[in-house]
Image 1 (cartoon, rainbow, N blue to C red):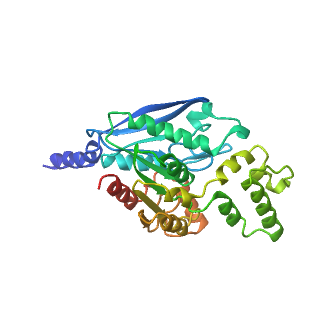
Image 2 (image 1 turned 90 degrees about the vertical axis):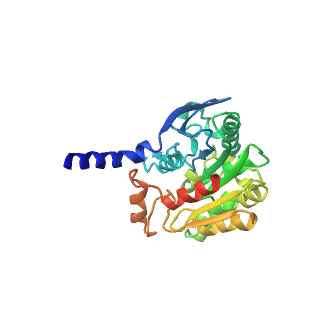
Image 3 (image 1 turned 180 degrees about the vertical axis):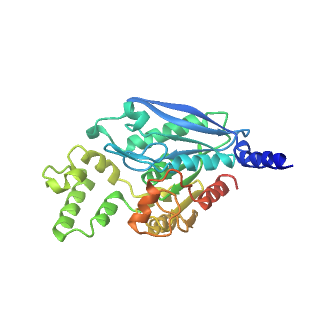
Length: 317
C-alpha cells in the first residue's frame, strides 16, 4: 500500500504537466532588413485562439528579459505569461524585437530606426497568424511600450479580434520623459522641455549637454520624433475591437492613472487593476525599490495568477 501511495503521489505531481501538453515551435518573420525570430506555444487544443505578445521598451527579448551591457536582467515574465496561457488552452507567439537577441540581424542603425518599424513588425506577425489555419482568432497583447505598438498595429485591422494593453502608458512619450525628470533642477527640466518641443515639431537638436546625451544623442532623435507623434489616448479611442486594459497597482514604472486615462479615452474598454502586481507581472506587496528589484531578477517567481485569469476571460469569454 505504501508503494502504491508513492506512485499516486508521483502521478499527481506529473498530472499538471500532462494536462496542458504544449508544443514550442520556432517562428520567423521576414522583413526588408532581416529575419525576426519568435516562438509559438501551441497547446494540444483544436484551433485555439492565439495571442501575439509584444515586449516592452529597451533591449527586451521575447521572454521579458533585458541585457544591460554584460548583465542580463532575467525575470522570464513574458515566457511565464505565455506558458500560463497555454495551460488554459490559448496559443501565443512572442518574438525578439528587431535588433535584439535572436533578431539582432534584423536591426537597423540607430539613426535609421523608427517607432513605426516596430509597428510594421507587429502587423507582419498579425498577417502571418491570421492566415494560419492552426488558430481560430488573433488577439494582440502589448506590454509596457509594446502596448502602444499593439494598439497601433490593431487600428483599422479587422484581423485582430481583441487587444490587451498590459502596463501601457496613457500619455505621450514626451510627457512620460518630462514626468521622470520632475525631480531634477529647474534648469534641467526647462532644457528637457525645450528639446522635446523641438522634437515634437519634427526638428532635431544639435546642441545637447553631455548630461542629457544618453537620452537625446543625435542618432536617437529621429526615433524620438517618430515616437512622439503618437498619443496613446487618441490611438486607443480609434479602436473598434474589444479592449482590455490591465495594470498592476504596485507598478513603479507605469501608474494606475495611465490605465485610467486610456479607459477615459475608450469607455468601451474593460479596465482591470491587479492588486500587488508590479511591472514585471510578479506579486510584490511593496513599492520599495529593493523589494521590487528582487522580483525583476527572479525567473522562478510566477506571474500573478489573477492576471492570467483576466486575460483568459477576455480571450475565451
